[in-house]
Image 1 (cartoon, rainbow, N blue to C red):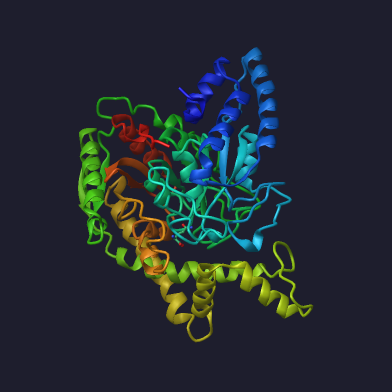
Image 2: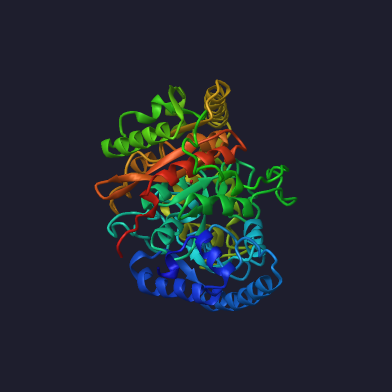
Length: 495
Ligand code: GLN
């Protein structure tokens, strides 16, 4: 088997035995990037020399661990792809925007510090929609990333680069960020696993802010076990980030044990929301998801129809709150403090106007305008405050279902399979609809994962599994049991 195809846990087993070296593994991944990334275009920045230096270091550390019989950190020598929304010390971080085209962070995001401490090797920064606003990676100010399953189609977004890198085996694991679906929807479009943690499970410190009450970092991986591993590494309290919950981090990987049993889901109650099978859902997607639900039943789960009556309001609520928060967060890009500056005159306001006018793309400007409007005097109560109230109703829908004894809720991740490049760029509403099923969990702050569950017209379909706040373990167990019983996640595009 080619080394670049390995999952994190497979590579780790080989590294432990000394059957492969980190340098070989890193070279294999860099060669793979050379072979396919001109077509896929997953990466904005590749740091090959830095990665090989780190690999040499990791090899020395592995030799020590093997000699002394000590346990190596979880990701020692594992090549990683990181979404460009995440600050990396000394490595350019653009968030897909022109306004940050020259920004080299002097510090690491907390999630990066944790990955580095676990021994992970940064391979590069992945392409994304500008400031994570989008569902196709077409809003990147640099170039469009292509779906490895069909190069004429989008990989989803906004973490499309990370998802494409996983599908094309251009790293062993990846990070994305999810504000309203940006980890899960690209995972579903590329036959990969994407996990959005509970709001507060993972620190946002050093992650370029889009909508602070919604943003979460999450792993995009080749299988569920790797998602559990990465979540365990990046989760936890952070004194630098007030919303990062001060709770112990479970051992997510051990939580997966038992999935090999005959009926691993015995006693698990699965809710199937009526509202997630509404008009607009592609028939082929519905078929794959219904089949997946039958697999869960065959593993011992009991299923029941549930209702989340405010589902229809998730989209308008999200598109008031997210732009409102974005309009405030993006005020910091003024051409003065850092990043891009367009200095056509020496008058301060002119410089700011020119910098923001050229530095931001159309979708970002649309959101700043929407958000500023929704927050302005006279409209605040009618829009922002109203949306906050509806957000509570959406959260209460989930509370009610879980309080009635349902353990996890399942449904489609996206109403469609990957669409064609260019198909939705001129119609923002059509683009927004790609996330109808992923917005409400983000508004409710609860964890959710997308895993491969089949194909429609040769393109991957994702199954979404949703759990109570801070109950990632149960969600991962259900996902893992399904994955063990199926082979969808092993399918690879031919490139
Ligand atoms: N597609 C949604 C948006 O454009 C969600 C993006 C995200 O999760 N970052 O806002």
